[in-house]
Length: 487
Image (cartoon, rainbow, N blue to C red; front, side, top):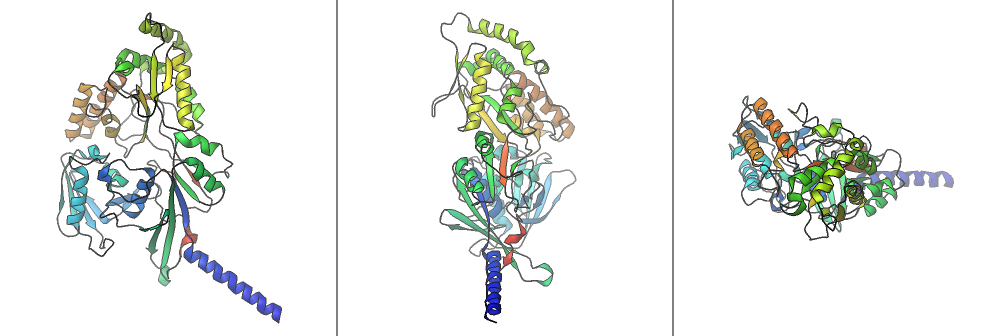
């Protein structure tokens, strides 16, 4: 009898422990980067941890689901006018942390703040067609456009348009700092008359990929986000469980841009030569990303309205067949210089940056040029760009090189982009984009290599994770096991 009682007590203890695990357990998520804090996007570029935190604790009018599709955020529903010039959002009933009612007047003011002249929001330029943001009632807000923007919802779902008020957001998670991490919780509806449940996530950030990968291998974190090509080598060199390394099929800019309007980068002929000498196939192979394809176009296949991105004719000729001519051109440009031309390139720290630098030393060194990394804080001739597009519109790609922000630009392309911004015809806009891309590509304002690289580490228990085209990952519904009863 004593043995039976002890067995029953042990079983009860196990059951109690299991319930406690369900109540208190949380998915552990680590983001590579620094600055795990809710900040105003108008203050400047967000770090990867800030992006993840804002997207999950300070949602905008809409947000991304796990697959990168649009779902309701602060707005419970919306309507788009037939002419595409008006987006009307109806807000959910709710309160800001602290008890203040969420009202359309406050939301409209917060969105307008992101677009003001003094805003440092990096996506501010993408909202150039927004004419007015007005509160129609306490729960209805309208965004009026000067020209149709079918990708507006994709932009509004980005964390750069999350709504942060006094350092706090409206969800979907409530966020509380817990020593060096953020404790995220959200209440879930009761299933079929059952008791309410709570979803919990422990969110941390680490400046280096080494620590994040080690934490994953050791089982101390179940999901690692924020990986780029620069630190991919750290993950590739680790003993990871099969299938845990995942890549997002993102679009964007991945290549070299002139860093200043003087020195080697100012010479259009030299830029063209350097562009043609890059062995894109070899560089992509060295990065070790499955299914990554080299490209020589600014725009990426699959963007809305882009039938065929502009690819220079030389890109269809194998590099080996062009090498002799490239060397002859380099000798002519170099002339009788006693010292080889020095080209300084700014690349991200990490294994990926070293791969890029070594490939450029090989490819440009074959022409007689010397390639060195730009020292921190020192001027560079070219810098490596690795940026994910916030929407499937070609506009963001091309406007990255407008004269307002780029040290080397094409004024006639700027005029085309401005005309596209004002046009109400999708066909006409796409024609403007196509011609602008051709002009920018022929002027070599950008040396494209491939699509950006974004990777994550995903534990097998995290069944709610999905790769998506924007590399934006909601922390909702990561795994059913975290749904415990609410205290």
